[in-house]
Amino acid sequence: MVDNLIIAEGLEEALKQKTRNSAFLAGGTEINRLGSTVQARKLISIGRIVELDGISDADNAVKIGAMCTFQDIIDSPLVPDYLKEACRFMGSRTKRNMATIGGNIALRRTDSYLYATLIACGAKLELLGKDGETETRCVCCYLHHHDNFKDMLIKSVTVPKDALVFSKRYSNTVQSHAVLTVAIGKAQCKERALRLAVAAKDTALTRLDDIADELEKRDLSDAEILKMIEQNKELDFKADIYGSPEYKRYLLAVTIADLAKKVKEARR
Ligand SMILES: Cc1cc2nc3c(=O)[nH]c(=O)nc-3n(C[C@H](O)[C@H](O)[C@H](O)COP(=O)(O)OP(=O)(O)OC[C@H]3O[C@@H](n4cnc5c(N)ncnc54)[C@H](O)[C@@H]3O)c2cc1C
Image 1 (cartoon, rainbow, N blue to C red):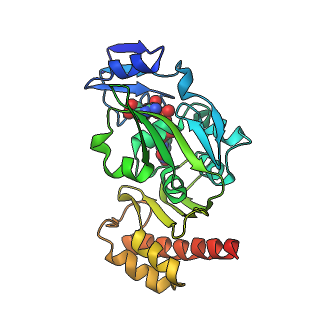
Image 2: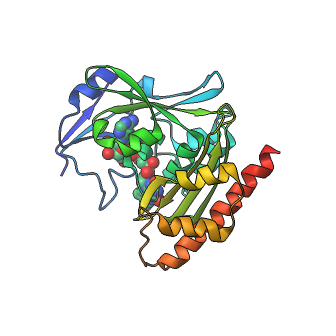
């Protein structure tokens, strides 16, 4: 139960207040949700901190303040279309007006709207620690080594403008949780940088490097991709209302094949 609310006026105050059993209050869509996954006694509101706001050009990239909402991102003329598409996966306009990109990244949900796309484009995070030091980390590093970053404040997210990213989300209705969100991306400045990622509900939020590496070298059939998915221990799908493990593996395989075809055609 929350018994302390701090309205932070600046970055320093927000970081100083971040102790055990506390959470940053951004859009509040998860924190204030009935049955929320966030357990905290103290909330530190970061909504007034100007450094966390705004979307700006950064050479060949776009820098997005952590407090920008999904709707801010959709409305910005600077943001590349592939990220706007991922933001539109959040079907509710009301929620899009409140939910922030920083909050979504911090949650690391297996049905995340944004993670597959952010991984596929090679997004970078600017993180602030208690002692004021800034670290820049790729979103994969934040995801896989979260214990090192859990008390840090996400200040901004930088995404490349020229990345080629295609994504696909499967859910029963636009408002429902997604069973699968898949994205594949190629950052055009890198020599070998095909990135493939999946958010698989209650299963995994991960990069699929082995499949991406093979796709970089040659075309793969649906059956070959399916075999690689079957061998991936992280993708231990369970039967639930969204379907059987076999169905989910099949859906993921044909989706990857389809998205890989789109990347290939776009690169011609
Ligand atoms: C009905 C419903 C359905 C939902 N379905 C989905 C879904 O399918 N997929 C999905 O991805 N999300 C879903 N969400 C969760 C949520 O709406 C989004 O993930 C949203 O982007 C969270 O952002 P927020 O600003 O509201 O975060 P908050 O609720 O304010 O905070 C969430 C967490 O993020 C941390 N945090 C916030 N900002 C920062 C920061 N700058 N730096 C470090 N930590 C920070 C907080 O400490 C807290 O632990 C759903 C929510 C609701 C209410």
